[in-house]
Length: 253
Image (cartoon, rainbow, N blue to C red; front, side):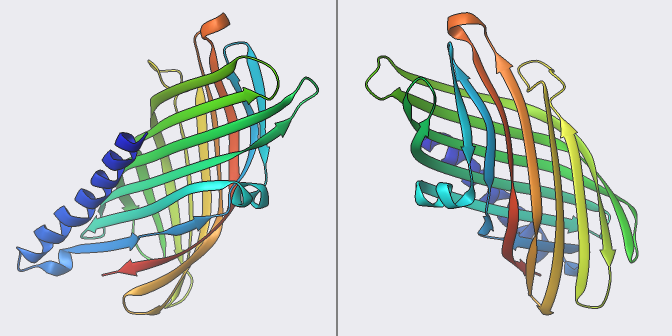
């Protein structure tokens, strides 16, 4: 998990440094626009099930429970736009939580770690106050799950990772000089190779830019994933929806 997280951070750093270096090496620095949210809060609520071998564990936690059991958190978002037509997106999220889930059979001690890394490209079909962008890319998901049935053997451990192709679109409405609204939606997986059976994502954000290089962002995001592999004693299934409000600060230049 540590190696995967390190790789995700490296991808984010490269996505930040490479376009910046390019902009500094050219005379037309205005050809590039950049946006970096080095840390944003996704107050996520989780609702679904995780199956390891023959044991299905409900994963239903609101943000208050997740916050109380939070053991690690890292989030970052970066975008680069060339001449406001072609764009690059990198988003990294890491969540590590531990806690207990009570079931009719036993009390389960669950340790859950996930890394999600999105890498995609945008193309702006329409500019102006009502901009429309197409999106295509990949979403990499890595999970480490440990389930300990207190008082009952055995302890279940599983690690899985998969890569989902995603396609989607984003609409951006510039409401005023400092205010804008963006709505992004995408779908993916489609059971291609080792991808999830289906995944969908929807986010609506309000952007307020009171200063030249700083913007405040707030909104709501829903991410739903349905992934399954193996069968019987080798089965692993992850059918979980993550949703909640987003708050962050973006550096714009």
